Length: 391
Image (cartoon, rainbow, N blue to C red; front, side, top):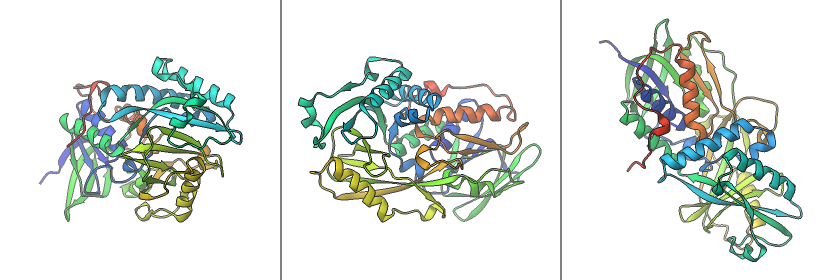
């Protein structure tokens, strides 16, 4: 029997994978997405900090274009997915011992507002001392000032499902419990094999997108001939769901190493995170380390000494970063793309990625692959597609 034919086959059902599925199907291409787990968004795309944001701290590394792009996407997602993405007040406390001074915060938040377009909802202010007692029990000893600004929050897994639902409405297909086995690149197609429910299946693809996240390098090793990609760094990050709820979000400077840690409202409780540790093993075996829990609880106790420290749940995920010599905290968050052939790419691997800019990532992927794919009539623009929560 002849194998089924698709223009685009995507490996990985996280936010980047479903974003490409939506973009490709909107452009009129036939799409198949393969996810090895029983449902979408079971790995990194369910274990993030749940933020749709510009990345205020990225300004410290002068990543202005990334911040501007992210803020533009934040604005769009607030419009397209009002049930999934909502504005949230963020507070940045500055103490006598805080490394980032009030002047630094003024400059950073001013630039953040400027890049966002200087609309009223983007303007920050300082919380009056008489209102500090409304900040969820935040420690006030040695507190100099509190900056307040707006950013956005989401349920990352639900957003991923909503984007895939949009892709399905445009004609895309997806298989869960579909474990990718291998792909063979030929002159005019790619032969893709995968197991589903114990049955080996084969499809033909015009192009293959490797959106496997932490498994991007191991998936590439099963594509022949192999494209030459540098093994990325895997960065383990843990979040804690703690019992005591907060009404607003907090942008906190960890006393020990001056990293940023977030405390966020999350489903009637609070989400605290994240950590950053270079991970060397199989991402499937990743689990929270005791030192990660201790680190986060130390930050929590420092700023909210009266809160209970009861942990309801832990979430440990893996961020993919291009390999570099810099410290993890200072590493660029720009997404990288690797192709098997610069002139007529048939395989593209996505290295890294940021939840907020998944749509732009998908647009860049399709722009690269259009030199290989046949011309099709566009049927939709992802900038105009509303996203609704999937029941």
